[in-house]
Length: 362
Image 1 (cartoon, rainbow, N blue to C red):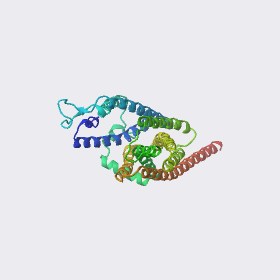
Image 2 (spheres, helix red, strand yellow):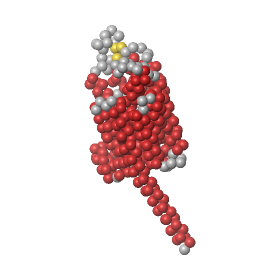
Image 3 (cartoon, rainbow, N blue to C red):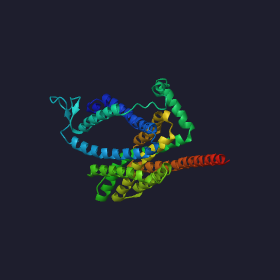
Image 4 (cartoon, rainbow, N blue to C red):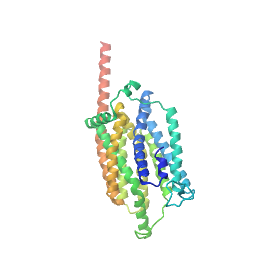
């Protein structure tokens, strides 16, 4: 809520502060909310419903994204960017309104509503049983990060899960930057235009199509998850994503490229619920938020490095494909470990039942 109004200022330092606050908010969004949801399921003893909840959340996110895109497009076209003080010239004003700032101002209202709902509808999450007293006596935040780092390094499952999520989400963010120039380059070639000439594409329609594919992926996950283990399903998602991005690299046809991008977006829609479910089972509850934030360090490194490298669209998609192939093999290793552990646990449980049955007969 503090970040959003800062976009109205024409001051580099204020805008930089706003971006820092936005980065903090993003880290909280992808760690605290998910940690709370998993803990709420554990408290209610409905962990078997966790995958369904993530699927519903992913579907809802896609619906909201489509609506937000439509509202933002309409709001941005309402009025021209101007100083708050109408008597000032555009070069003299420091605080601006209207134009493409309207979506940010509308977002502030949405954030206020979210804050009110969270305040009155959510219970505080103090982690493991022990409640508020344990939370107040817990170590300082940097000690918590140290513990989370040591836990991540020592536990191979947690480490693999973090690497896989960083690679896939990094490829997803690079895709966000690269799909527009990739589609533009193909459209120019097909229309015989030069590199300096511009081409108009229905970006709003393309974005909406991507969001519909995300919705499809979320719905598809809820169906497939009943028949496949999450770890095995993740391998399929990453493998299909790799093939889709490979098609983007080799194809010179805009229709084939667009279809491949939509397949990737379906995989994105499946990724969030499947990864949320896996992390819910792998990451320990008392260190969940800290470990989730550690996962974002390599992710941010990947995104920043790709931007600083000034990659072309083709180079960007090559990097994305390499990351997705790597994520596929890492997920395959994680799936083998997790499924073997699960089968061993089942065998141990059956053996204990057999022994108890034998004792009863004796």
